[in-house]
Image 1 (cartoon, helix red, strand yellow):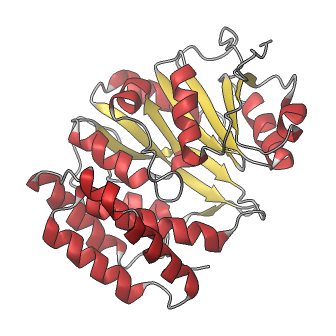
Image 2 (cartoon, one colour):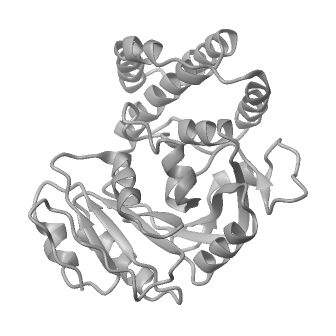
Image 3 (cartoon, helix red, strand yellow):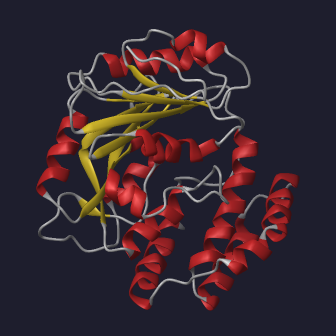
Length: 313
């Protein structure tokens, strides 16, 4: 088993798990949900080592997971790191591939081994997005159809469908690609943070693919604040737009959001927060080249008719 250091980091022991892949789980104040996820991960035939990043405010999570057979490492940052907790976990990973889970999602048996096999065979592949099944009824997440219907043409030497986005809790990445892409941007913190990382991975020459042979189960926690997440989602969409899109597409997308988001106080808050962050966003602004912008524009058009990730709630 692992031991916790004075810094709050747990030393990793990956000897018992699949030597190719680590699972990173971020959590905050949801020990019951987390234990269900850890039990599911511990039962996988791959027996992956799991790094838990605990963003909780008290010791409840640490107490709950102490001695759990799936947990190879526990990270306890001093503040709530949101999605950036995944960055902390990947820094500690010693395997060539890393899979992400949230505390309310887990991988179907065999999926992690299949993902590692695909990454072994395709050196240009930086990320695999899995099919997500939601709730007790295992219904398809609306995002599955968006990814499966990606407007990008198939690549003959790559598995699955080339995509420009992914769902964080249903993803396997090449550790090298994640690190070289800088991980999740600290400015975005949480809420649609995947869009910027996907764009930067593509910019570096990595390929992203949707592989429906990989499956994640997602039992969305009832403790989730959907309105707060909508505020962050709109804000981060605007920030991504002004960080990476050329001027005219950025203006068009901003105008589209202004016309289509719900007319309520949450949307006002989101635009106010986005405006307040414009100084740092404009300092870091680095628009993508024309070929990538064409692909982003195709994806944007496809999303306008999709029910996935609408900013409501």
